[in-house]
Length: 481
Image (cartoon, rainbow, N blue to C red; front, top):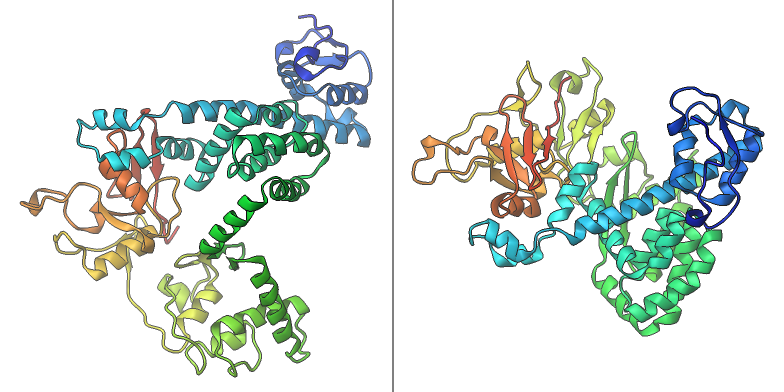
């Protein structure tokens, strides 16, 4: 195969000369393999950077020999790859918008269910979210966000989508613009987008986000005030797991309140003695004291001091659930434990919680061959407290593949429906037939005719079949591996 002037299409890439290439005759040239340059590789990469992304250039990128690039050439190659990632993400936006536009209507869902589907449920349901979440292995919230951003970009922001396809901005910038302009009408959105289109190609994502906030407030000051008051009503506490047994705890609250809180934390931190802690460590300990300990109960803070006052004076009563193998608990082995609502923690953290004053222990049994929790309970429709505790500890999260809702905030669902007239015939209320489902996915399983679920009693794996016929699996954690 002979290759000449292959690489970019000026019409599709916004202009620019195409670098001249030639083939060395080896198989695979069509995919860009075995292609050699008629000039230095640095010049070729610089030309691709100038020309912008295209399908032809994308096919040649796999043949780049990075060893032939100078330090300058590697930076150009990095930019070229980022441009093509943006180009591919623009294509993904098109596909996502099409998926969102062609989901079943409420009328079609009700018809598929034989007229038995709750019309309120059908009208509120976005059937595309779960399919995209499972297919791309995303959280439901992330999938919903991508679908919404794609729909907005395709419908209202042709200019921004064009910049993304040309590799001039990142997907994060395009998504941010779509989300921040979602709350304004079409005319304001077009006005702000016109301003931002000239700025975004030279901005980092954080600069784009800040500039958008400013432009939206300038274009729609009254709307900005209304939205702020709504966000005040929506204020909430956040708690996210972090690495190495740590967690992020905070709140979404009015900015002026956050400023006052920061001053209070700094003031408390300054009162601590010079004991080797850094300023940031003192600030974290001050926040912990201000939230957990009553005024006057602070005599120093930190992990050691906090553990010593777990049930002491000035501390509000709390319930913390940890699941840990017994031999790890007593120190015969080291391994992970499971902190409810967080995930895996170290053996030392588990022992600190387990042996704190006032701790209550409850025994849970595991099957030696699988490591899964096991339990046998009566066949009644409502699970006993012990059975409920067992299923929550076993599965930890919603049993839908893409969902991370903690099990203690979920409904307990019968995988095989409970037979109210003849419980002995199936659908019994035993752990093998119970699964935690968040309210959204409980409604999905109960009401949506296209989604089906089965559970393997031996492995605990649930298999969900979607309306498109694709199968997605979810497996509960194994406590001993």
